[in-house]
Length: 121
Length: 110
Image 1 (cartoon, rainbow over the protein chains, first blue to last red):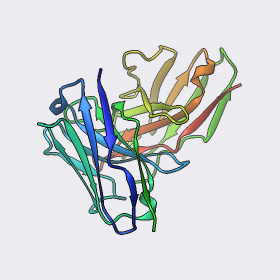
Image 2: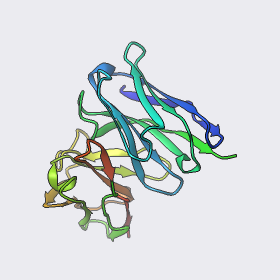
Image 3: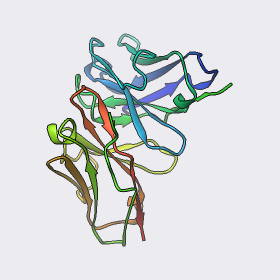
């Protein structure tokens, strides 16, 4: 079964850091781009970052550029999101999603159940 | 990048058809055939229903269809069923090589 499973969420202080992980299984991980999408409480979806299958191509939403870093370890079938300089507005459920091809980060066909990040003092 | 514009809510009776619009600009919806639609039920992860404007992934009922005209994309659900009640989001690739979502539309099946 094709699936992705996020972990690493929790409570962080403003200005602090967290690293999210996403373990993939059931598909050839390096053959697909991956994205992170978040959803603030009671709000809509927000795409925040994507990475190509090989890891060489990354993109970020303006809201997180310079603070968040997406990466992947294809030998471990794992996607990461390093989140620094966290703000209260980063509080959200963070979803990891598999994209449909190795390069396209815009259509996501497999989603995890999400991990919750809360930024509060 | 501003969010795509969707109506906050739509409704229909079982068996009817409803259409949800998604309006962007020439830098996103109008510039690329890279519009997707997602269905999200409360407390669950989104599910891809339509990709590249009108393609239905395997397993998605053919009651769901997508189209695009200019800067506006549309999702049509025909033969409404109670299980279709959910939030629906459109998304588009943008000229900045990012992805932008719509604000979401709550579908109520009366």
